[in-house]
Image (cartoon, rainbow, N blue to C red; front, side):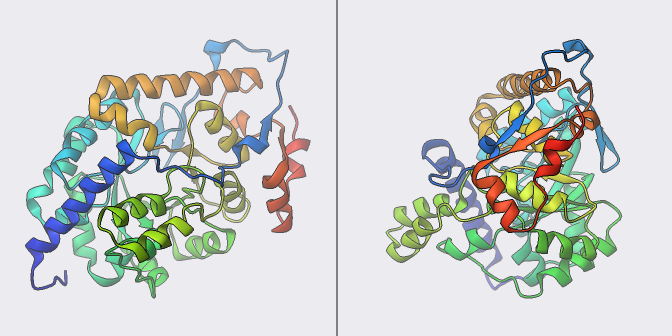
Length: 375
């Protein structure tokens, strides 16, 4: 690992940034303003004769060699700060009990400062059987970390998968951003070929286009988390941070790109129709109905983070309560379209209208085939 002259100071800076992110997401409006996820343009067809009972709906799905009780993986939130310890513990306890999965926040802080490892390691301690994904950022794999360092991050939580997160927008508008992406695909390919666990590449709120999905598939990744636009905007988060620092130029950059990105529903279709890889739908997923729509469009799993953050601060019971509500909504959605399994959900007819349909047609994707599927 190639560190600077003052690793301890860098570790403290990273930790402070993690705390800023938590506080801003809890206390400020960080969601997209003008752009939406596109799920409002996606309609499942109601079946008045569903021909099944609600309790017969099977939500389970197997992805990345793990059987999830429902197609839900809590998206990466945090780590690397004392305040993150309880958040990760609360989420881990919940996903362990419910048979789900979670990603942890970027582990850069712990690789820079070993004292912070426990803020991540707590996840495996609280969730010995759940699906856990380690996490490292693209700029760090390009500039700082060797395969050995990445294996250290994986071992830190005994991870079942590695997430490499892509955040070019955030880095470009962050006051101390590191917008270094030259050579990123080569590094992803190198990591994917050297690890014996699945590598998932995840955006962070701006979506993934078909062109990049195809490159990632060729590079050997095991899955793609689209993390599209319409939910939490990291340009917004960094805009608030820049304002607090009175960094006017960076603040204005964040404000301009607040709504930048590919809507989540669009990104799910672009990726699902372009590659033969498991797709995770995240970015503004706020309900079980959103999850049903995402799976109907081609996703295998769905993820969400912001709706879980406040409950996680309060404890695992609140996290479980929130997740159970979303699971109930998903089960109800499947019942109402006559789908007794997630595989069956992928076969029910869906109507895509509005800007989402227009975008996809302009990009050459088949929207009408969803509506023609057999019910």
